[in-house]
Image (tube, rainbow, N blue to C red; front, side, top):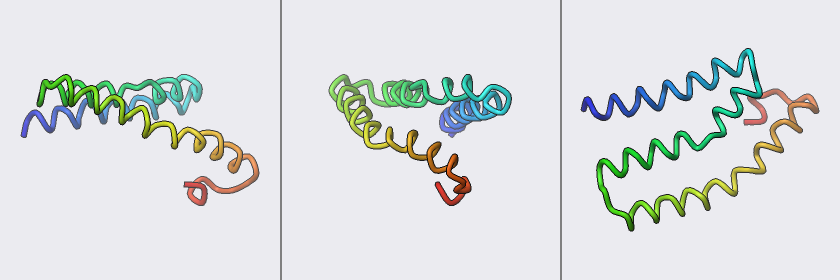
Length: 91
């Protein structure tokens, strides 16, 4: 249970840091959020729990393919916000 809480805390701190920094420096916050920190942390946690190279390779490859469909969202949301749609109606 302590291990689970530690994983949640570290992951949450990264997300909190990105959003806090983004309030003052949107570009820097976006850079932190766009880094594959969550994916790398997830792979670290997975490796610690199950150090299997085949499983890790499958996980990393699947992560790549699941990221691709979400990329257009990062172009669509700014376009819709600039056209006057509210954030909550976009998401």
